[in-house]
Image 1: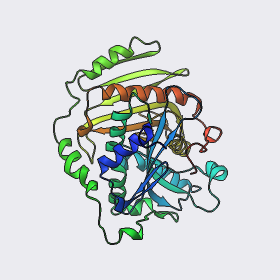
Image 2 (image 1 turned 90 degrees about the horizontal axis):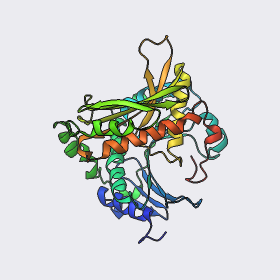
Image 3 (image 1 turned 180 degrees about the horizontal axis):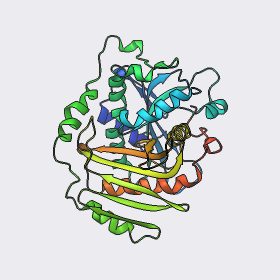
Length: 355
C-alpha cells in the first residue's frame, strides 16, 4: 500500500489521529491496524475495489470483538440478539454469522463470534469528511463494549458464549485509553443541548427534492421527515426524527428505514442477522446502524416487521448530513428488494476476509 497516496491509507491515518492511537496499544498490518483501547480488540481495515469500477473506491471497516463461541444454532440466542440489538447499539451494528453461512464459510479451527461493525465507502470526493465521520461514529464500539461487558454481560453471555476479551500481554497493567471517555466528556454533554437539527430547514428541503423523483413522496417540517419509496408492490418507509432522545447520547438525529417484510419473530430475527452480516462485507451500503425487528401496530399476533435504525449524536451535526443519511436509506431500501428472504447465495467474504 502506498502510504502517501491511497484513499485507504489516508483514512487509516485519520482514524488513528482522531483516536490518538499509539504504538504501545496497536499493531499495524498491511491493510490496517489492530488497537486495544481497553479489553477488546478494535480492527480497522481498508480494501480497494479491484473490478475496474469508477470512481476508485475503498471500503473502510471498523470491528470491535465482543463475544466468542456464539450459539448461532440456538433460536433463543438469535431472537435475543435481534430484539436487544436496537437498544444496545446506536451508531454501529451487531454482526455474527448465520448458521447456514458459517457452515459454508466459517473457519474450521475457530468458533462463531459476535462483533460490532461499521463500514463506509471512500472516494476522492468524500474521503476526508467520511473518514472523520466514521471515526466519530465507530468510537462508540469500544466504548460500549467496555460498558456492556459489565452491567449487561448476563444478558449477552448465554448458551456457552463468553466475552471476547483479548488485551495483549504487551499492554501490561495499562488501564483504559482516555479516548473511551469521549462519549461521557463530549457526546453526552452536547446531547443535553438543544437538538442541532431543529429549525435548520434541512428536512423540508430534502422532501422538496425527493418529491420530484418518480415513486417517491413524503413530507417534512422543522422536526423531521417521512419519505416513502417503492418496494415491489409496496413501499419502504424512511423517517428522520429529532423528537426521540437516545438513552445514552441524548439529542441527535434518529433515522429509520422500515421494509415491508412481515413474518414470525424467528424469521425476522434471522433476516436481521443476515442483513447485518451482508452490510459488514462489500455491498456498497454504508453500515452506520443496525437491522432489527419492529412491532406492527394493529398487526396480527406473532408477526414482526424488518427495520434499520441509526442515531447521529448531536455533536456530529453538520449541514447536509441529514440529506446524506436520507440518500443512504433510500439506496438501502432499493438494494434490499432482491436480498430479503435468504442471504446465503449473496454472501461472499472473499474480498474482505473470513468471518
